[in-house]
Each structure stands twice: as structure tokens, then as C-alpha cells.
Length: 176
Image (cartoon, rainbow, N blue to C red; front, top):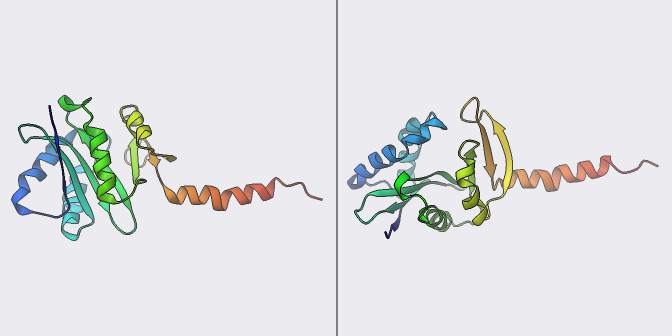
């Protein structure tokens, strides 16, 4: 089956049914991100109006939504907020195509990304293929008992290399 990859970078009333399809497709994300519905309605979809949000989607031969990548594209942050593939479409390379198109849409090869510990096994290979670099993990970021893994956090890299490394290097020097 061939999939058409398309980017939407503005709010359009004529594709309102697409927003409903995105809500429905990503419903399983509620298990890891309880506030997903509210985030879509109060943050993501309104962000399409001001240009801070983008949608990269995969459509199947019938024009039905097969997968989606929801992006944040602001001056402060370039992030893949949600990447989800319809269950019957997994294993066909859609995830890789959505990530590649997301990198183009965000104009970066190092977007931020977070993945819950329960979803990490499904994403590990894909993230490795696309060069995502682990930054840190945080327990309770979205769900009380889950751990969220953060990737490509440049601030963390700067902190480790430019601030912590010199501090630790100085503390381990022999005193004369």
C-alpha cells in the first residue's frame, strides 16, 4: 500500500474533520498522556492559527488517516509532540517517513522528543535510525507512575559539557 505524506502548517476550517480524525486516531495516547484531549483543543489546534504548530500526516490509498506527527515549531522550541501510527498500518515505514518530513517541516535534524517508558520499546529503533540522542529521564512528567525519556535536549547537552564537566574537572584536581 502506498501512503501519501502531507504537511499542514495553518488552521483551516475546511479540514475540521481532519482534527476529529486526529483526536480519534491518537485516543490510545490517553494512557500515557491524560491531558491529550485538552492539549489538542487548547494548545495544539489553536497553535495552527498562529503558526507555532504543524501537522505531518500519512494518508492511505482510501484517503484515511494512517499516521500523524504533531509538531511544535516556535523560536524557542522545535519538537515532535506526538507521533502515532494506526495499528493496521504499523511496520510499513510510515513512522520513518513522518519523522523525515517532520525534520523538514521543523527545519532541524535535532527536534526535541519525549517518550514514556511504556512506549519506548516501540520507538527505540526508529529513534536510533534518525539519530535521536538521549538527554535525561523524569519520573511523573505526564503520569505519576511513568518515566518520560527526553531526547535532543540541547540545554541538557550544554549543561553537561559547558557547565558540569568543568566543575567536576576542577573538583577532581589534586590540591597542592
